Amino acid sequence: LPPSVHCVGSCVWEPAAPDEDLAKWLDSTSKLGPVVYMQHGRLFHLGNLWPAVTECLGGADIRLVASTGRADGEPTKPPPFNFFLRDHVPQGQVLPHATAVVSTANPTAVLGSLSFGLPLLLLPGGGEQLEVAAICERMGAALTLDPESVTPESLHAALREIDGNPRFRASAKQIQSCLSTVQGHLLAADLLESLAECGPRLKGPRLADV
Image 1 (cartoon, rainbow, N blue to C red):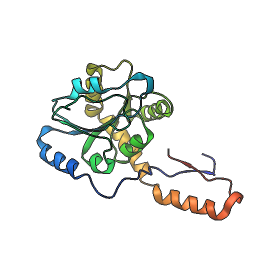
Image 2 (cartoon, one colour; image 1 turned 120 degrees about the horizontal axis):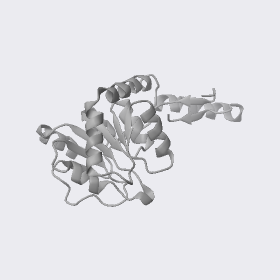
Image 3 (cartoon, rainbow, N blue to C red; image 1 turned 90 degrees about the vertical axis):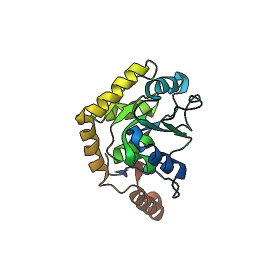
């Protein structure tokens, strides 16, 4: 990157107060199996993933925690007993418990997941999602599926692959190590202060999330 562009890493801001319902649910369902976090972002004209996700994972021996606020379409109601759904789930509260992440490749969810060293199953719908998914797959930390053709069977097979193949977790851990060397909010704030102090004399900095 040119000198005026700075990598600051993940700058996710979340409320200080934890979600007590999520904490209680994670504790009460601990015997049901591992946790998969899902961030279902916009898929625009492609619809939504809920039918395939519900058929594939509803009642399975995993726990699905999902942020649904930006999703197109409504999830199945009532949700399966092993699903915890909220408009917004604090990533910092669920990712330490998760073993994998399913996402439409929203950069916020991807950076958060990789900051915890978690492998990804990505279903990009358009825009920057496509580029983010391609980079993650090229780095070996993700598998990518086409949301237009995803089925319960292909979703299940992909989740088994990223969970069972250690190379995905190893690559995610390597990226986690790199992200741990940048300062996120602190560096971004310092750069903005420098920009405010120097004014137009400073060419940049432009802040890059990735």
